[in-house]
Image (cartoon, rainbow, N blue to C red):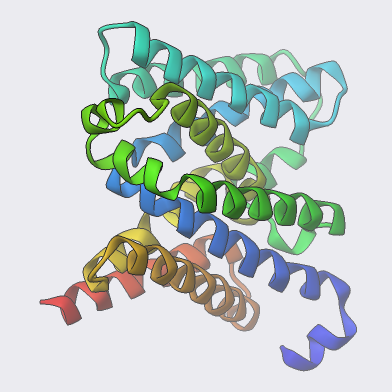
Length: 265
């Protein structure tokens, strides 16, 4: 594989994408796991299907349509959570089937075959472009910058929302920004692992890191390391075994989680 990397630019892009997405999803995933929001990734990822369908029907860029729809879902989720009587999981449980049903309905209105849809469902890391990598790098820089300035606020928020309010943290703003950032990260990850598997790349490395880490800060960077390892090992195995890269990456993450669970015990 290493000789092929020197000759094939698509493999170079795939390796870079695996490292960036693995790290980005994993460090943000620690807050998802700590805040008991594991259902978030599935709901936002499936909502992207409706955005993709709208992009196909309207003849606009499918990526940006999915990104916009995902951000709208994130904003509505936080709004309903703060202004209604439903809990977070229930709201996400409403948006997931709605988005899936809307996406399938809209795609049914299009009579032509849409081959690009398969790459969104199951990922196609070998088709990642340099433009995709630039977008992922920008999101990574934004996420790291935002966490640096809001790390303590996020700790308050995920562990004790009432204490965050009492401490003067603008909880609503932090929630809105976090949800919108997560929705953009999830949509950007679809090309690598797909709608079906993206939640695994967010939740599993963080869960594995939780078994080993002795502090939340240690859990954050250890989750990022596990995410990078899962991406690189999974991509290498998929190359030699000639199997789907997205599913292989997630399966490697699961193996690392099992290892962490056994080692922790």
